[in-house]
Image (tube, rainbow, N blue to C red; front, side):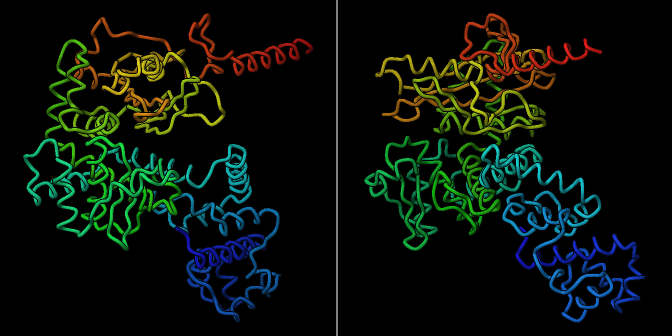
Length: 493
């Protein structure tokens, strides 16, 4: 987070360094002319110090400018985009400090090659506007990158969850009971729960919970399963036990005010998952269910039942455990939602080790209908109403990505979004087929597992005679036309 004072110092330093370099002055020459020490000049240019009026006047006289220019938020054509960036909210969208970048380092980067950096920054800003990228988009993307850096495993949170279970005698309890979590929340933190009030306010139908710090009440919306309630209670316990104060009070988070707020929300949610699905127990369960030579969907469905958690939490927990304990770090996680009109969108994604396919796009293209996620969602939509909400559908598929060597074992769970909703949701974990995966999950050689050639979107897919295609390959056709135009132009040479 770059504060307003830091922005002012950075902009002044940017101008001083730019003017000094334009006049080919060394630090010593500028020091001799202004009577400002070399070390202090370094601090000014690096945004560490903001000099008094007499020093700014001296700098202006030697650098051929005036006081007003140096202290203003305007600059020449080359500097102005950088000044706009430094003084805007855009720079604070990116959590520089979490990636080890200090404001002074940014200034050095900006001023070393100002022309190229200016063009680069302008490109980022224009791209974000063209695709309507918001502050929240940047926060979410930065969080996923943060998870990737840590292989989505956080030992301090695993330890905290284990300590909580030990402290409150939950160590031997599986699944963790909602009543136990509720009692701890009330007796230890003085927080009560209310399951009625939110359900009577229609505009809050998409908000799962809200914590009022003034009243010390955790409001829970209605129509939740025991597993969903357990997560909401465990998440609130995470905020309290970890002593997190910069936090959102609602679930789902509407508009995070900062990256740190979104990160803290993630930490409390991770704590909740580690509390409800203990690390040591889950590792053994994963090892056991993976040892079969055949794909056994019933055995896999028993795991979320054992811990009384949602399918989404179960698959997300795999993304914590598989990289750290089994060396399976080439993976992705996707949550999709869809309607009966066959409009599908990716609402959550995580990629470890690389940007795997599939991935979300912001250009309103149609995701490949050969994905297991979409096939299972369509199956849920075709179920009779009395069977739709009985349990999640689960299946597995080996997805071979068109014109690549990449093959992924995809495990997907799908179900209706809620009891009375026509929307369907699916969650998928995709695991790159490599030696680490083959060692753990022996069932990947099961001949009954379907292998399908897939792509990212219909518009970008050149697979011929695809029966599942939802839209023509317009992007491919456009590229082909460009090639033909280029060939025709070359024929004129």
